[in-house]
Length: 205
Image 1 (cartoon, helix red, strand yellow):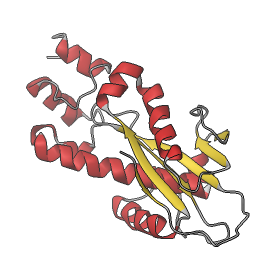
Image 2: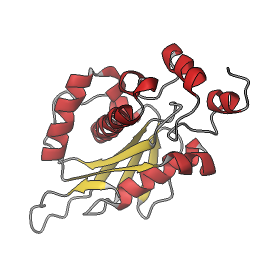
Image 3: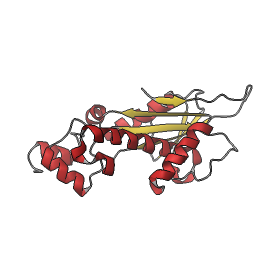
Image 4: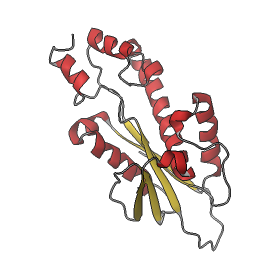
């Protein structure tokens, strides 16, 4: 189920609600893909928001706490490994985005989505290439999606420590490839991704 929070709005507010949307985890070989949607208070900036990939892990965690406390509304959702393998990673990412946006209460009037592809939503949608670096609400969504996914991969590490998920978060690092070839795929590896498929077919060993 999506995780969400909706602090109270000022009664009678007629402001247009704009949410930023971003995902985390399209490239890894293992684990779900996550997405977040965030509606920030206009005129109440959260200092330090930027593309989550350009922040240290400690800084992301600090900002994630501030976003959850100060946003008008936020939601985090995911699409499972099974959905990734069934739909493909792009469609699974869009599914996670849609789940996040549809969990927002109040609902946004406009969704700003990082990149050039967007899910079908009930509200107006605008894509913004590089949006996580130039729009605060998308930056906030990027941070929430990234921190949520990192936490999920640390949990997976407790189940399958031999793969080192806590270190590489499922990305295809040399150490991850070595472990994948040595132990074979875990239930959380994406079988539709070529390095995993190659091991299953006996080509990657």
